[in-house]
Amino acid sequence: MTQSVLRSSAWQKIRKAARLLLQGGPAGLVRKLFEHYTYHVDSKWHFVYLQFPLSNEFSRIPASSAVSVRIAEPADMPKIKDDLFPVMTGEQTEETKYFDLVGHPNVRCFLAEREGRLVHYSWVFLDAGSSPIVDTPFDGRLLCSCDAYIGPIFTAPGARGFIYPLVLSNIVRFLKEGSATRRIVVLVQGKNPAAVSFYKRIGFSEIPDAQRRPLWSSLGAALIGR
Image (cartoon, rainbow, N blue to C red; front, side):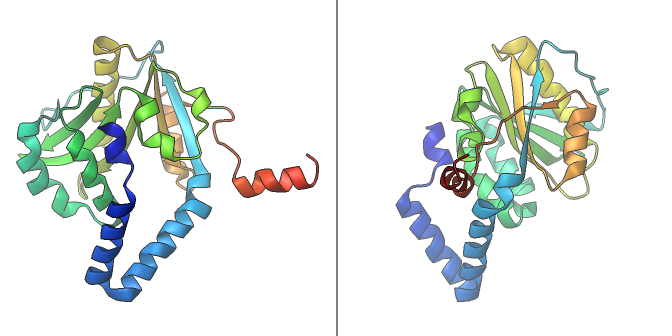
């Protein structure tokens, strides 16, 4: 089921294109196609992949009485749709598909609630080999069955800056106490150095040689004999 959610079928892609055409007209469809092209040619090659061995100590973030963190259950779906879906914009709306995985044995969705409203979610895939990272240029040979992947992550506007560290602390504690996970893997956009710095400050490190070379780079190297 996990892979069926992560990977859209050809029919689903056709339906999505038709929906975009109806909603945004030809210009909207062209804009989406350009964004898709930019992602595959440029953006995804700037990802930075980081790791945190669970044998290391993690700087626990003090609990906040104003924020509660819990794992999503199917009964949470109406509130998720009411509180989170309306504030997700752009590419974030694509992440609504992951909520079909709520209740899946190898996936957890951590929710944060403040003042009676959900303001954050973090997805945790207990098997990184069946997570969104497999659709990136990450070298899958570096993954093992004891790796967990965190992502995607979303925080509602107005709650950004302090919610995710608290949620991440809860995730680390859960993985240490309630799973066979030995390492956490995350990815961030390298064009966002603040995000890279955040993870490094709390103990994550870059995974050496984690990214596969672009096809055009490999072809170029072969042509010049490297």
